[in-house]
Length: 99
Image (tube, rainbow, N blue to C red):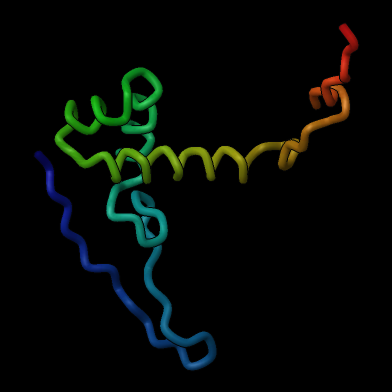
């Protein structure tokens, strides 16, 4: 098991306010590294989330956060933007049939 402890540097800028250093292995306030979240999300496609959590000695919630992170990243980087159902993909209302 690898435990990474790192104290991010903070700067109190007179014009911008308090700023915190960005690190390449982290994203926002996530407690897991980006690489580990991608790893968990990859295995969550092959196994159930519970099996993934048990296999890698983490919690079901961390696997869920990893999957949410990857899905959010995928939607934000999609070249076509958000998908909306088109008229051809919507199922028509069922018609009443007489017997």
